[in-house]
Length: 239
Image 1 (cartoon, rainbow, N blue to C red):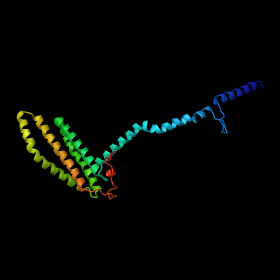
Image 2: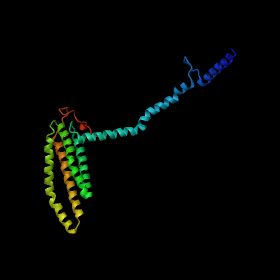
Image 3: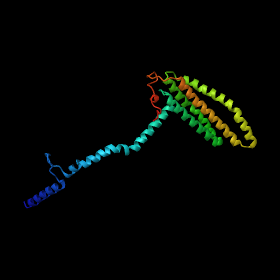
Image 4: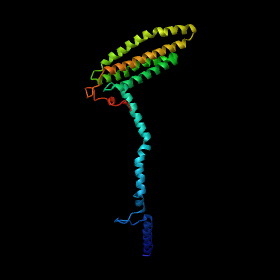
């Protein structure tokens, strides 16, 4: 029985502490009092802060992530353009693919020239570029409703054009080669031949893309190879 007063005092003390911690404030128009923490969550200042984050956070905080996603989309678009022969592409994508393949070919040949005997590996790698060439022209023929087999005719025409231009340019770099050999400048002779080869390659690649785009008319409607390409109305289909 003697412990009951002490127990009552403890209960009263707990109630007082609970009221002090809750810091309850009566708000007009509300059925129940709201605590200080609730007032802080519902304050106008907090609402304005949240609205500002909603307006500005997406453009500033998420900007790196958005740029990363855009870069990922560009890389994926370039891979689809060069490594897949299903679907359709328009004239702009054909130009992009031809330019990218031309740049890669020039870089491989330059590495082959600079590395000497080991550079033969890079010269051999240029042969692998036939596959992305086939992919871009196959999809361009698909865009006109024609089968990809016509791509073989384009590749054969490019080889013939390269041989003809190489024969026409032979007197130019052969005379320089003889002069360089007489003076002992073998390095200059080799680089001159490589430079002429780059010019011929650029003329053949870009000329083929120009002729194909002029001859083939895009099908504005879906055909057997898919819907119209994205770049039909965009000058930059990769972003």
